[in-house]
Image (cartoon, rainbow, N blue to C red; front, side, top):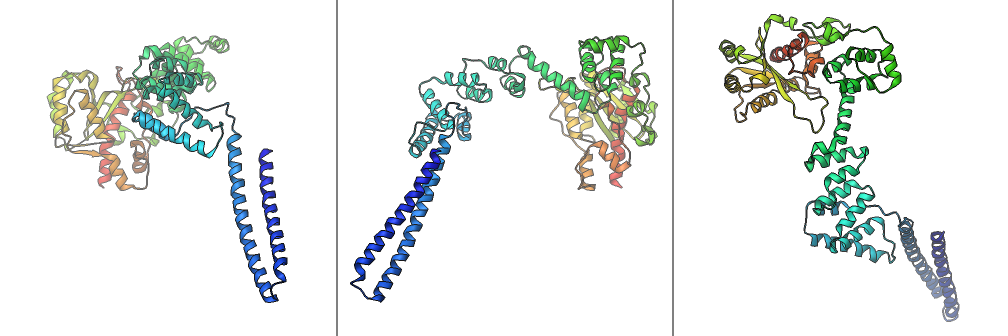
Length: 498
């Protein structure tokens, strides 16, 4: 309302000025009319009309600027100064986090406050500068702890964490800051725990939350068959219980069967009653019907010709050799691999489930080497400390044999790191994804399964990609999967050559 009144007054002022000017012109003309002829009178009248137009334009211009300035003032006044937000400019954050000189920080704040004070002569500042001027005052008085505690009380945890780092604040520890937060701040809690290297044992709430999110991912988003998820959780009743409780709404029948197979009890009495009332128990098809085939064929009634099989390349179970220890790594096998003109290679790693930010890194458990008519699967977990295996791996890395694979150098470097030999020269390594891009530059996907679909017109089953590769014995479907991933590299490479 005040703003409208001020605007109206500005317009009235403009009209009054124009009227006064017209009256003055009229009186002046009447006084001079008797002393001049008609020509002089017309000339003077035209000049005065032009001058009057110019004066009106100037008045209108300044009136518009004045109205605009008044509006901007009231926009600032319209803010509720009692609800100050703890916000700061990017420059202030950058200065603090880069740990610049505090004197420079004070000078910058002084300028910001002074500029605003010169524009608006009022004790009502905008929220951002209220906080920045207050921060400057507390810094100068060495009372920054009050400011940080105020941030924490207002649940501005991210800003509080930044200032705690910048000013080496220790009144509230980082661990106490994490405990103050709710599950809604899980991302920030995780960041603080990692950056400040806090003890995981003191942050079980965060770890449990991350574990649950990871488990839900495997159940619903990883596109794994529920039979595969059940196998991954074998031996851990808490994970199986989580599976039953979270999967019940999606597939009631399968959930009840999983609970019956493992004698799982759940907290929901209605679900538990359904489990207790069930008398018919079936077995997990993936574990019961294990065969030397892709797992997708075992689990679902899909046509066998939809998938790439080892038998397509005249490779059968007896052509796949498991090397579980140093004794099985015979000199004849090593010579055969080193002398081969082409070898396809791949690795399989153990993935901790659930996997989160604090989980251990994946460990390479299986190293597959494919020759045209033979495939060797090396148990790297048991071979890591073998001198014979280490010497073979180093020799193989720089051998004349073409080594072909997907993400091949990364896989091989993981093997070398595992035996503590990072400074080995890698020679004659062929990356399939690069060959695929050369042949199909428009395609965005380059993974092995997509390459098979594009070149062979068949799918590469990936159900067994996430497996407990440390466990023995391996199932037939796991052996088929691991061997196929290695030999398919040879055949894709020859397709690119053609």
